[in-house]
Image (cartoon, rainbow, N blue to C red; front, top):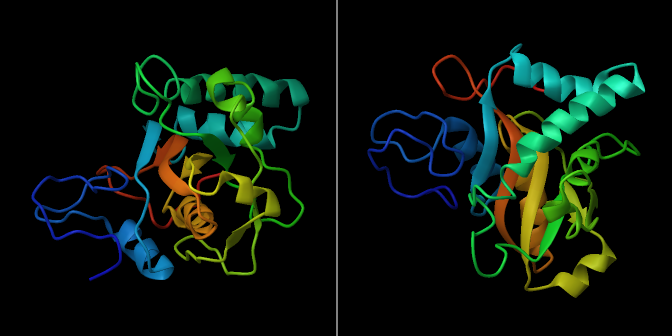
Length: 219
């Protein structure tokens, strides 16, 4: 049995990322593949929006990073941050309406490109409930990461992560396609002694049927 994948249940949704799965399945193809690559349990994902290639959410998530004009990037970053804020505020899907927060520290998924800035930081910094708890605890590791290739050492925790050992961590990214990057980041934090409680993303790329678009790279 793949690490972290339960026995099949007839619910029609992946128990980790909520995309459509066949009757009797509990886990989608992408999550099963990523779990096999990591050899450890996956972390549940909550998305502010499901989107399809080429739609408005997709364009927003590309333009906040890639638009050639700074004011345009800022405009789309504000829109994306408002989406992310729905997961950290009154809707309570991640942060409870009452009681302790569901996490102790927020960690964004670094870029897989060497020395590239972490674009999602610009979104988190616009959401006070997340920005106040954000800490840069990950860096790119030696392991291979690709569209459907996850690696337990694709990222590694920095020395400062030691002070958070045993604490709950929320992993945040802008786009979730197959989960290889975000789940590898969560695995690196778990290896450093933190407790990943969830992955929050602005957009989750799906296909026409509500399942993953495994042949499309999002943003």
